[in-house]
Image (tube, rainbow over all chains, first blue to last red; front, side, top):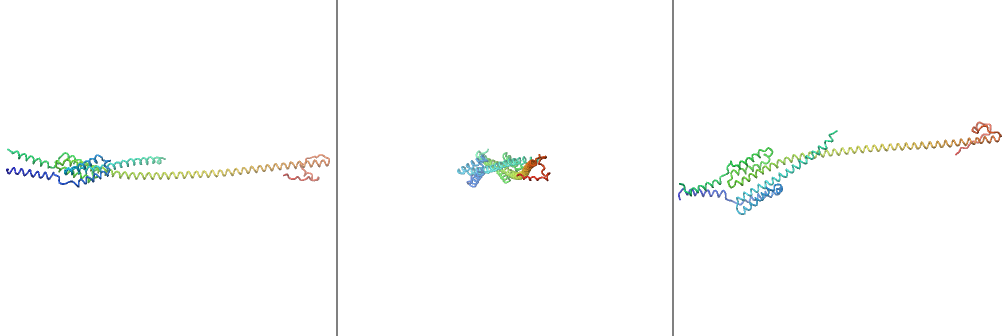
Length: 129
Length: 222
């Protein structure tokens, strides 16, 4: 083997090691799966299934996929899916909060308009001589 | 001439290094997501409502910039979701602020209506009190009128009774006078019979003949 060929082989080996270090799974994403599970529970508690069904369903599906990936030792996929599930759950909870407050704002607007009409309609006859 | 194994190895190395290369800053997805974040941050109503969520969206975008090709889809998804989350949180915070304003307005209106209702109740009470007072005064006036009418009626009855009594008395006096006249006439007739002369005058004036025997004093009739 010529020196140049040895260098090329060494470079290939180095690149392989670097790729393996950068891409290969390191450990099961236990913390991320726990966080995703908690976020999913919080979204459920915030009535996300009612107010943000699509996001909540996506969070649940990705959490299931993350668990399956972890079980098959595909830790990279498990990590990504757990993170995606968590952000889906957070978004679902936020949309539930938004939906509730929007409903409350609409209710208050209607009630205030009704009260204002009531006040105005009863005030006018008294103003007349 | 290049040797085939060496060329193959160089190609593999180039491909491997390219796979690990971070996404370019001028990536279209990166630009699109960066513009979404900038638009949210510049929104006058929402830009400052969810700073932590916006920071997380920026952090995800930074990860996308550094991500390997195999991670790009993941970080695009994460950045999209983080931006959605930041916007949703900002909208919720904005609406919660509006809800506070609306609740204060609601409290003000409720208070105004409660005051109005209380004022109306007081006015109604005063109106009813005045009506009751008017009715009481009318009843008192009616009672006084009835009392006066009753007294007037009693007086009239009493006057009528007096008139009846006077008439009765006059009648009795007339009857007594008639009997007295009849007795005087009879006395005169008897006296004339005793003297053998006809009576010249009726016995209406028995006192005009003091020389003769005085006539019997008429007894009062009962």
